[in-house]
Image (cartoon, rainbow, N blue to C red):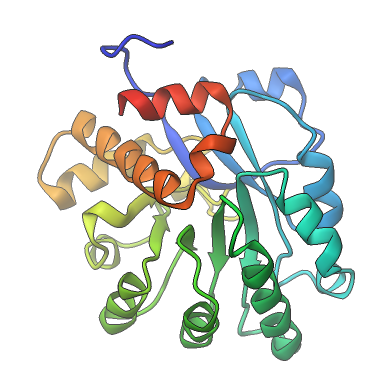
Length: 254
């Protein structure tokens, strides 16, 4: 068990890490806790068997991956979902042509995971309203809207639906300020987030500095707030019980 006075490590609630990551590469995360999303059921099934105290692996069906959408099998997804604490990356990508297939898969993912104690990391680029429609029809207490670009009204709607928001360093201060402080989680979206979002998974220190300015508080308090937000959503969803023991211990002291 960790001491209650021990510092909390950096937290990254949405990053892409190859399922064949090596122990040396994990050590390069410098102690950060990372929620690692995958793009397909094949990746998610492999990652579910990867045990590491710093990585929380997700099972995803990325809306921008046509092969992952075509290969989606509801029963196979449900079997993997029973073994993980995170579903992701899933969602809608409005610039893709197969939006109806995306809607169908997202709705099925949310239905199949509705009773699972998991977080769900949801992509909504160029399809904010449609994504909220699917989420409203298929609610999930563990929903986390990743890099959410909705306007103030859509942020309010998402909040009413119970969603949290994972924000990257590449997001503007003005947009970050739209999100309720108690619903914000940090992310890098590595490697898609670009240098402003972090040089590696877990590199959220720059984001914490900006949040300290937006929220008019200290960086230490920001980190505790982010961990407390994670504790709140993992407790409400039940996902806390599936997290690695080290992460569970950190949540206890947040």
